[in-house]
Image (tube, rainbow, N blue to C red):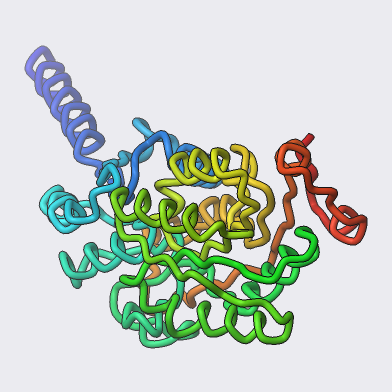
Length: 328
């Protein structure tokens, strides 16, 4: 009887030990996140992404692990940071902006990649089509070049006697040249506006030189074309425009929240929240090739009335009535 009990106890202990070890071997999903900027400049977007994960039942440090990688505005660091995530054997990579997505795609053809925000993923060769991405990349795009004309119209309505608008763009972004720039030029012709000078910016040095050019030319207003590099440098951009007392139309509300005049564009924080749904589906077994790329459907107009007053502008009622938010 004693022998039987000993055997029983030993068997029970061994079984419990096996269960514990099996539980310890349960793999916690690991998400790699690749951003071109710093945690401070992308705070709103990371919070939106984390909120989306939380709504789906994921809790960082418990049910998932997140490997955060930040290029700190140094695009040349992105390939190595992407390679680090691949070496860490993450289950999925979330990348924001064209340079980060390209770096991730060049680093791996097997690990799923979710595009948090990108311009024209088809034109950039990141996916085969929006409906059928193919390969290991899918996600969300802010592709809506038709918004450029609407932004320019709003800027024209807000600034009296506007005749000349300066453009700022990143020449390394082919989407800007192929779609958004053309749309802006077409809208300028219809509105009777001259687009000059056109300032090209690729880093902080060229940004400083660009604003020096605008100052010499006494630009009436500035129109920023969409690019992640401007989002990362928005603090410096807002500093320069405040000093020069220049009205600027942006595509992203964070610029306006932090002191810019006006923005019209997609709810980007909502796109980041929805990025979590792609991660969830991929972790549950869906292949990126089978997940269509999503385009924005909601857009917002935000006006900073405090900035307008500082610039001596009276925003027309037509714009005030349309605005989704007025910052006092």
